[in-house]
Image (cartoon, each protein chain N blue to C red):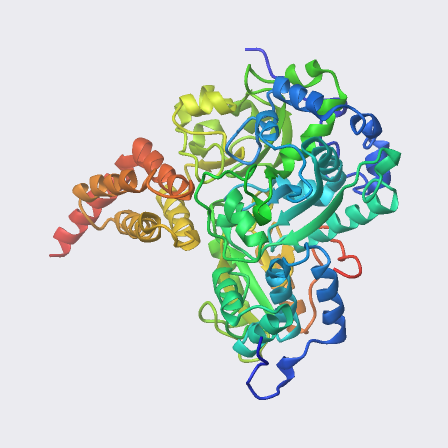
Length: 433
Length: 188
């Protein structure tokens, strides 16, 4: 099979993702940053939106919604209700750590993206909601913003184009749910981070009740290079409907974990073997892979063998690309313990607004724990699956779905592990008796 | 807004440095949207008043921002980074979620307990230096296992690294970060 080409530096959006070069404005400019920005700020915004639609850029924060389409929902400027561009840097999906490296190693990619983004959707202000734990990262980001102001790239009349953009960093305080876009808005307004009922969608009623677009860090940063280059520069990567490059965070049982920018639709096996140094103990020692952050159902080794890493390929397999956080588990890992830990995470992070989630996610964790310890019966496995189906799709936001999918995924491929434990425990108990 | 009725304690005024920062924070939000500053100001208050939020501290934040107390309480109790009881000088937060777990976070927790003589989560060591908390994913999964002490990340932990970090903290010092860090620019 033909290998996916390794990206050359000129193919990459994040040229300093490894942190080896200068993160500051000087280094970014030397890498080609801010070049052609003036032209972008004097081109008709509708042209940008059309090009983004054609590029098939899909949101990098997990849902994969087409960015151009999202931006086209913004209403025309209204003096009474200013528009906002909000950047979601509340990276919290277990396994995901790509935005952290963008913020600390290449923050100007985001700043430039926000300038272009604000101009395109008609916003004059942008808030970057950074998770509270990213203190050093937000310091870097603040420094980058100050550099941009000093250079006339932010503030009033940017580069003499008449475009005004201000960027503010807002730190969160440790709540996974604030990564959900309307919970994020609530939090930014100084409230508990509880998701809003939709509709109305943020484009109509967002931050402070004003038209708002919310995008992930990576998505926003990818916009300027897409607009500056020919469409083919972006579309030559990945399959139809999944174009471009993407940062994959590979962690867990691999020899060289890391964040790698690679072409979309890269085979999972290639990503793990060529980029992340391979599975510890070799590919044959692979037990399972979480392909896109903790919410996405895991793949078994047979699926992993041929899997392509893009939105559609993973969806067809009953899972998802999510945030492209690949967590690898080899045979030395206690898979049940890891999945139970993930359930505990969701039980801890439920915002408590909807009853099925607030109560149910806790039950699921308790059942996972009980079954994992070999307690319980075969029937309880079915009961657990039944509960997951009763929670999924019954809540205001997708949190509960994301909490249930990994449990369903575990049972799909690894039910036998639970059954073995129950059986083993029974034998042990009867011997004792 | 009525004045806080509790006795005048140290917690009833912000230092001039904090007050300056609060003014800067308020500039980021439109007029009439001062509530947006609740989280950043609570964070400042926590940093200033011994690393945790007492009721008088929360009341002070409410008064400063012109909000009913409940608006501040409900935020302070919702977010995990706000400590509602005292913590040690060094708040050690070990991530034990999936990627860290696979890479040995259980061992890190054990090591921290052994080196600090802490028995369980949430307690303060007798010398007042340490509190250990197991936390959810801190977003440094490719550098697992990791922990956060106060504001700073320490990644790719090994037994010897943990031992060294705690030794430094026992001397009352914040260890140098393993990864490059940046200082917050003035005024933030």
